[in-house]
Length: 138
Image (cartoon, rainbow, N blue to C red; front, side, top):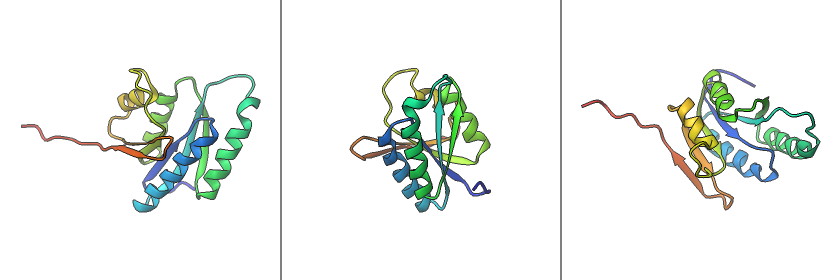
């Protein structure tokens, strides 16, 4: 599914309600004429049975929205996502809400990939976006 078109990346965890993130990302991708991609980064562990139903569900939601879904195994989700973004022509990520912590996924991701726009989708489906702005030196 990968091509040269810019992509919008839905970043999901192993929760059923991340389907709202994929749906919002699809709307944004269509509006911006971008490819839709879905990514989840799982911490390496020995048994994934507890989350297999959620991952399968999100995979099916991805396919219904015309997207591929990539699963990476890495203890550092923010670094793995930034690496994926930098290699995949992604211009915006769509996630759940920021948890407020100084070491949270979004704070760390922004450190690794400061030139990527971020959109967050709240549980009530409200959408918040942070655009990339660069000011000219004076």
